[in-house]
Length: 314
Image (cartoon, rainbow, N blue to C red; front, side, top):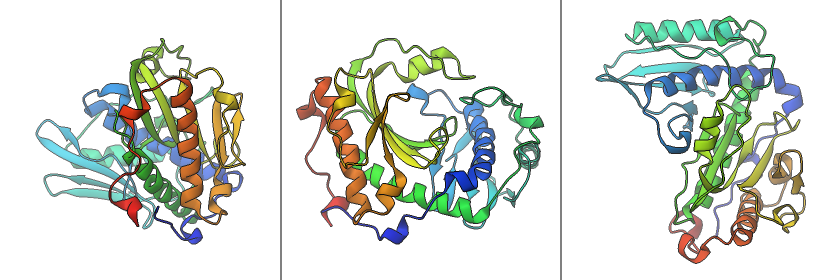
């Protein structure tokens, strides 16, 4: 039996009401993510790039630079950015309404106080034109603390269910991680077979990065706060998309195939308001994966187990 969270654990979200805050924090996470990218060895499928959900927000996890280690954490409960060094030193500043340029300056100043001076590429990625260089963006400057706490709570619950979903797969699978390029929480399963060359085309992102990320067949699922859709939602897609995938009988009923995105979409609100949010989301994750894996003829017997030990045994 799956663990079931109270409906109150899944907070109400409003992308339309808090879009300015989400857009600003998205760019803040790009600054922090680019610091991790600049100082971390390359891992397959860009797994060295994402942030991770923590007990209070999002974290880079440990970054090593020469003989020093450090971590940067977004705290969306006490609303601070924390920078901790393995030397025992730390810096922090309040998360509050401020421009992207101000956040960039404060972050780099805090790193300098820790003896760190990373250089990052200043252009935001995966965002359509026009984009402003991060160090000079005075346009995005919103921060609603209560809205970010609710978004963090939604990420926490989504992370928990995605982790349970991931545990049922024996093949190669990504961590549950937060990609700051698209501002989404994602988990990806791999068939083990190479995929056709990806066409690329993501804004301000080199084609070879997308081609390496999709070098092998995948079925990926995750959570978006709402950019591009107008509302928070869960998504699932396959690359390459097998014939018939868009017509697969995905559950639950509110889920639909978005032809412009090439993905199945399940509104977050449908999960939040269901009698059992965990079970509702798991049905979506399992049914979209079943469609991708069945139609693409994955070796499901070798890649799956019927039940994962531990958490889903109640």
